[in-house]
Amino acid sequence: MKADVIPPVSEHLFIARTLAWFDLVKLRISIMNAVSALAGYVVFRPCLGWDLIETVASVFVLACGSGTLNNYQDRKLDGLFSRTRERPLPKHLISARHALMISMILIISSLGGLFIIHPMGSPVLLGGLAVILYNGVYTPLKTKYVLAIIPGSMCGMLPPLIGWVAAGGSIHASQILVLMAVLGLWQVPHFWLILLSGHGEYRQTGLRNMLGVFSIEQLNRIMFVWVMAFACVAMELPMVHVIINTWLRGGLAVCLMMLVLLFAHGLFFRHNVSGYSFLFKSLNVSMGCILWVAIADRLILGI
Image 1: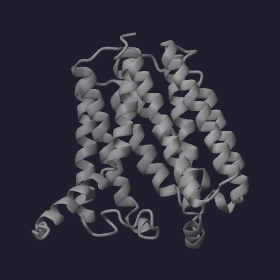
Image 2 (image 1 turned 90 degrees about the vertical axis):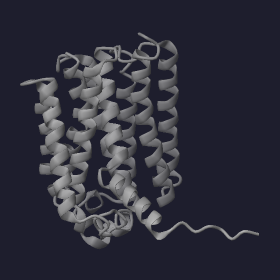
Image 3 (image 1 turned 180 degrees about the vertical axis):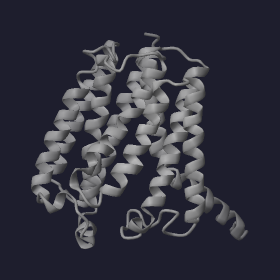
């Protein structure tokens, strides 16, 4: 038998560094932001074109830059938690100086891209506001004030608005306001599930968080009400004509009902770390489904 071929050390190092860069720019979150910008754009203007591609690409690059800057800001804090201590800066896979430099390049180039597409328009102002809220307000305050999640949620509501106004939509339209509300409501239980998954470590560090105000059981009940609110507002999407197709409306309703049932079971009958992790994934999948359903309703079905 032939012995297994062991890849050279340089190959392992290359893969590790590549994955580290993906982690540094928070690739999954950045893709989510780009998809939400895409949804905002096509709900108003359901057509493909360079303007759409450039807008979504700029939002993606902006999210990568903001995520990189967040990793730079949290590099010491991340070393305290098992969930984050494997990130590239705590593990010294990438230097803090390089991370800061890359974040500035990405943020400036993305805002420049939005400016070129829409000079003196709202998209570049909204992009700048997103960076201010996330990196200038939420990140430095999240360990000091339990309500810092509010500016963090507001930041997560801006990508679909950037796509919407880039397509020519009004910021006062009911369609975009409801879509933004869905994303804003999703952000809060998303954060709380991270907190509950690592509640022991959060208590050991002494950092201010919701578990210093409420018990786990109380936070579970509050989060269930919040998820119910998220599901109810998401059900408004067909009513404001964000989702029009009958089959997609039915699929959305089934998805949201299943989500509520999963949370009822997980929070009141199985509230443990593994249960919180499952609910975290379920919540993220549901939000992703909502965005892709809205996109499919306009582009794939040609409505």
